[in-house]
Image (tube, rainbow, N blue to C red; front, side, top):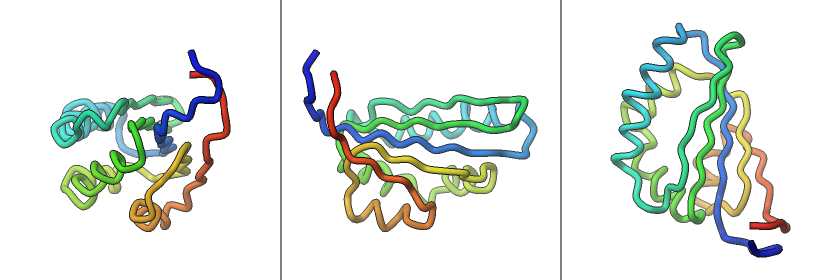
Length: 125
């Protein structure tokens, strides 16, 4: 492992809540959203994973990109699509945290979500 090596990855953490039945939410995530994102992504998407708290009807989506341009590329492909619109209808975004650099174009697209953006300082990777 390397000490304080900025690998240029961008991590996006989206916290959501939902009111839909949990089975409908799981169906959407597993059979619509994940396959769609997978079909649009290239090697720049490293991770796209959901975690749900079924009893509180909340969830966290974690996306990891090789670099900020990879995030911008995928965002340009998926924003405004039927799957993305359904995501917006199904979930309330409670918070968004971005760890790493963000392109100016993506900053503009996500500004309505009031993201918290944190730049890399150091660590072990």
